[in-house]
Length: 450
Image (tube, rainbow, N blue to C red; front, top):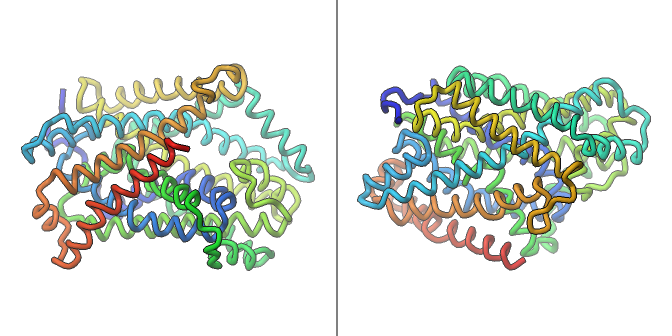
C-alpha cells in the first residue's frame, strides 16, 4: 500500500538536507577507514587518487541519485520504476532501487557491530582503561572484546536501538534534527583534536605524509582502492541518496549542494587524518597498521600521552557520532520502502527492519567467536557481508544509476534541471556517459580478476 504523494516527507530546509547528506557521507568510512587506507596505500598517493575519483566518479553519481530520487518522490524501488515509466522505459528499472536498499540493509548489519565497538571504547578510554598499558595489553583487550559474543551483542544492540529511535521519529524530527546536532559537534571535536596535535608534535610529519606529492606510489592498486573508497564514503549505490533525494524540493540546486557535500566530506576525511597521524607519528606507531589503527594503535598513544584520557574519549565520541549519522541513513531506505509499500506505519516499519538487521548483525559478530569456523567461500559472515556489498552491490548499483540517468532519461530535461550552460553540459555528458561508468567497470572487472 503506497502512501499518497502529498504525504511524502520533505526536508525542512536546505541546510538540514546538506547536514543529513554530509552526515551520511561522513561515517566510519572517513574516521576509521580513510586513515588506515591512507596508511596502507602510500600516504599522499592515495589522497591524490581519492580526490581525483571523488571529483570524476563520486560527484556525478551522487547528483544522479539525488535527481532520480527527487523526480520519483518515493522509496528507491518505486522511484526508479516510476521515473523509468515516465520516460517510456520498462518499470523493471526498479530493480536498481531494490539493489540499493539491499546494499544498505546488509551494510548496516555489520556497520552496527563496528559502531558498538566505538561505544564500548568510549567507556574504556573514559575510565582510564588504557593508561600505562603496552601494545600487547591493548591488543589483548581488543581481541578479548571480539572473542566475547555477549559483549559484542550488548553494544551492537545499544547502537541499533539508538539508530532505530532516530529513524522512527521521522525525517525532519529524527534524521534532520539529529544531523543538525551531531554534525557541528563532530566538527568541533575534530577541531579540538587537530588543535591539540598542532601543539604537541608530529603535526608537520602528518601534513607531509598526507599532502607531499609522491607519485612514485601512485599504482593501479592505489587507484582502485581510492575509487572503491570514494563510493563507500559518499554513500552512493546504497539507495541512501535516492531516498534522501525523494525528500527534496525543486528549489534545491543539485550541483551546488553536491559540491558542498563532497567538499565537506573530503575536508572531514582529511581532518581525520590530521587528527590521527600526528598521534601515530609522535608515538612511533605504524601508520600502515590497517583496521587496527583506531582500536589498537591509537589507544596505545592515548594511554601514554598527556590528556590522553580526555583526547581519547573525545576521539571515540567522534567515531560514534560519525557512525550514527551514517547508520540512520543506511536504515532509512528500507524503512521508507516498508512504510510506502506495506500497511505498516513508520514506527512499525522501523522496528521490523531494525529487528531483522539486528539479527543479521548477531550472525556477523558471532563470526569473530562462536561461529569463527563457519565460512562462506572462505570468509566469515562479517567479511562475506563486507565483500558482497563493497565489491558487488555498491559498484553495480551506482553504475546502473549513472547509466540510467545518462543513457535512458531525456537529456534536455536533465540539462534544464541542473541549470547547465552548453559548455558545462558537454563536460557533464562526457563525465556522466563515459568517464564515471568506465571507471566503475574497470574497478569491478579488476576486483573480479583479483
